[in-house]
Amino acid sequence: MTEMAERRDALDEEIIKKHIIEKNITNAQRQASGLYYVPKTPGTGDLIQKGDSVRVHYIGKFLDGYKFESSYDNNQPLRTKVGVVGMIVKGMDEGLQLMRKDEVATLILPSNLGYGMYGNGGSIPGRTVIQFEVKVLSVKKN
Image (cartoon, rainbow, N blue to C red; front, side, top):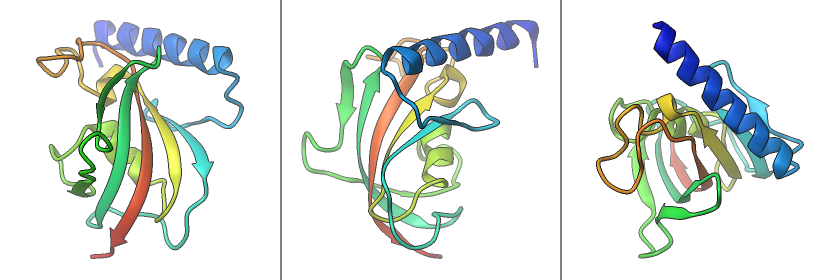
């Protein structure tokens, strides 16, 4: 890892820790990647695994609460196959593998697990920590 990447990761970690303290989040679980998983409502069944097809509703937000996208807005849940590189951002893909059917959780993503150094070319600037509120609607085991 380059020195610049290490500094970026350290800054993202500071931003996330400050957010967790400010919002009084007491059940955040930090993963080795830097992803924070915050369970809200427990799910049922087995954990989602690579290769499983899922249908989820989500709200993407900046840490200040500003919503940048939501599957609820047009009632179109996201359908994706977990573990397929490039289908969804890395942090959501990793976070889904910590969840079960019917579970609701918040995933807080450092920039390298979100839209990275360059952002999404639109509403999300590069090097931005983001969060997704995710509800797993269905899981098809493969």
